[in-house]
Length: 310
Image 1 (tube, rainbow, N blue to C red):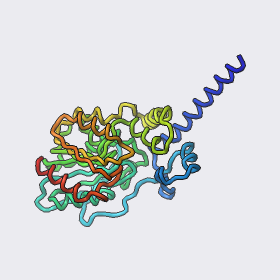
Image 2 (image 1 turned 90 degrees about the vertical axis):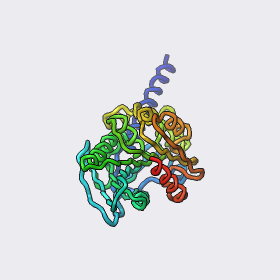
Image 3 (image 1 turned 180 degrees about the horizontal axis):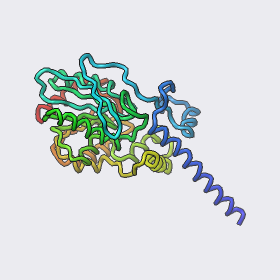
Image 4 (image 1 turned 30 degrees about the vertical axis):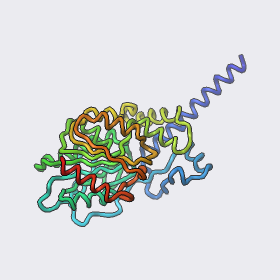
């Protein structure tokens, strides 16, 4: 009886400790810290002791700030579920407008290199800071869930200005937010370009644990649960692979084959579920990164061919 009681108390203590760790991790994953905190290095750059510390206390994610600006732009303030800031960059005799949405831990200035390519192809660009980043409100992120409404707000702004040829571009979380926005709000962009969206919220959290060589069960599930609780949404329903079934506009899906955060299986499921015309392009030596670093020419060619055909 005494052994059984000790085992039960031991199980309770372990359960409580795991949930406390998950609460800390989920909070730090979805809440950016003050800018003076140093950003936690990638898992492959950490020592065992550093990884152990992160396991218990989570990572530091300083609030992203815009470090550069375009040469010619107009700052646009929009009221969505949060106040968000955008840079509108016009060109002469534009073929349309591309709205660019950054990834997790990014901000709109991180998209300037890709905006410059769209600019050179004859498109206006509209770069958006999601909530918690750059010039936008708050310090939280929901990894694309609530950001979807901000995608809709930016899209509606252009519609209200009479723009009819609207293209959406998103990388990682930005791609996920686009997919959810189209599913939730029945938006009809001319076409979309998606870089490395994850398949499910659980998958992307589990990948973070795998990258640190830490078992995903049960901590990944607990982190997803508490992340949703802390941010008032059911995170287990945040599944871009399901959103894809509601997307009928032309889609270019891009993926780096060495991506450790998103698997080829997730990309294949998303691609197969897309309901409209679609094209998948992969880059053999790219990870979860800016594809222009290694594949600028190929990326540009893929985008040009897609835009010409749509």
